Amino acid sequence: MSELIQLGASRPKVPKPEDLKLQFSDTAIAELEALLTHYPDRKSGILPGLWIAQREYDGYLSPEAIAEVAFRLNRSYAEVEGVATFYSMFNRKPKGRYVIEVCKSAPCHVTGSKNVSKMFEEALNIKMGETTPDNIFSLQYSSCFGGCDVSPAVKINEKIYGNLTMEKINEIIDMYRRK
Image (cartoon, rainbow, N blue to C red; front, side):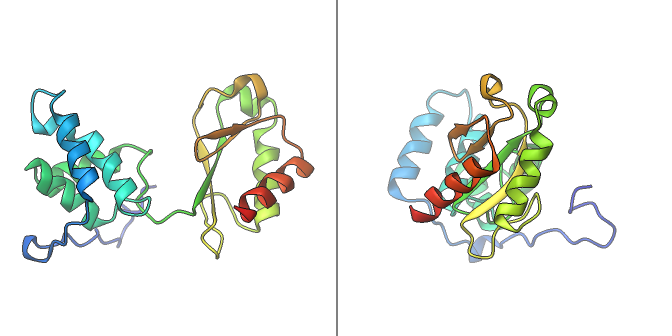
C-alpha cells in the first residue's frame, strides 16, 4: 500500500513559493528548455523535468524538487506530484549511490530471481526496499529491463548482470564498494 494513503500518514509538506530554493544547474535549465522545444506545451515536459530533477536533487524527488519542476513548467505542485507518484521509476526517498534492481518478470522469476534477491539481502544485510546504512546500496524489485538472456538478472544503475551465484554477487558488491 502506498505510504501516502496509509491511515494516519501525512503528505509531504509543499514548499511555499517564497521558501523555494531553486537548485537546477545552468546546464539542467538549458537541457530542460531544449527538451521543451520538442513538445507542444510546457505540461508535456513534466516527465523530462522530473528526470532532470531527480538527477539534480541527489537521485530522488523531494518536495522541493517537485516544486522546482512545477515552477519551471508553470504547473501546479499537485499536478507534478501526481505524475511523480504515479510512476515507479521516480524515487521518493533517498537511495544509495548504487541501486540494485532485481528483475521480477516471469522469465527471471522462473530462473530464480527470488533466490538472487535473498542472496543480495544476505550479502548486504538489508531487506528488499532498503538502503545500506552507508548509503552505498539500495535494493529493490524491478520489472523487465531486457536481461532475459542472462536471467535471473539484476541491474545496478545502468549495468545488467546475470547468471548470478553467491560468489559472483560478492565479487560485484566488492567491486562497487571499491569505486
